[in-house]
Amino acid sequence: MALSIRNQIDGKVASVVPGEVMAVVTVRLDGGGPDFTAAVTAEAVRELGIIPGGGVTVLIKATEVSLATAPAQGISIRNRIPGTVTAVTSGEAMASVRVAFGGGRELTAVITREALDELGVAEGAQVVALVKATDVSLAT
Image (spheres, one colour):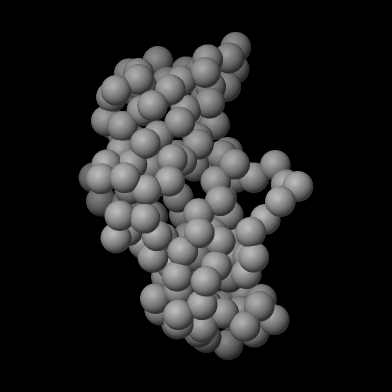
């Protein structure tokens, strides 16, 4: 199956914290890099056979990736990925920003042109990509 989701990153399940309705899954990326946290339904964990040590693909829509120009503290967002901007494509209203992070990987963020300008995001800039655990999907 081909997907339009820009961010597709392979890893192994490090842990699963089950809940009645939702589960919190920690994914360790193949080849190193930061762990990702996903909050998915308990039903999905069962149906997809998500277990510690199992392979998964982390899926994150580019529109669900926010950017900060400094480490974010005092927030509930679990996925805080430091990296370097490698490319910026900007239009009238929106911009696509590619961010390189651990293990030679990249995340793509789509943000407003206004945010791009306010933050001063350009190639070579250091940023932190922020993704809520509930915005991370998993595929097996």
